[in-house]
Length: 209
Ligand code: AMP
Image (tube, rainbow, N blue to C red; front, side, top):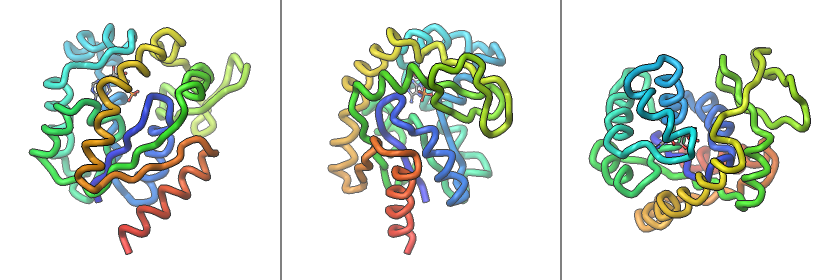
């Protein structure tokens, strides 16, 4: 099974991806996590990407496409994979269509006002990459591994508003693109994590049966 998770920033893609990848033994490919790993290692790519990411801009298509092409060739992707945060532009979607066939695209839909509030509360674990929402807690720790959680630089309200604008301009057209291919499944992302997961699992189980 080869899946794409589509949706605006802070819609819950990463959180849902963790659960889906585990339940169906799929490789979880998050281009955002891959780029953050490059930044942490201070590679040439990481240094190039950091300013773009921190300001909420997209990394150029050619760089991302190469990164994903190489990643999905790896052994752990042979049994299927889940793309989280890729493709984000029509050019990326076209490149992807030339390298593999996708079974379904899950579009997690959440209202923009909810997204800005969620991003402000979002904290990530620097160790295991788990994401949590915190309410007024300054020293929150990861529920999975206990490490001290941090806030992503691009989750500040200014960068977040810019990311949303970019999402509607560059990524939103992909909904129509995949609808036309007949592989889009809209998911209501406004409910609890469990409610969203069960809608997704029901859909994937239906496809597998
Ligand atoms: P994410 O963790 O998916 O929210 O990604 C964080 C940031 O990484 C984005 O705001 C972009 O700057 C960059 N990024 C991640 N995936 C892509 C992509 N497919 N195309 C361009 N930039 C990306």
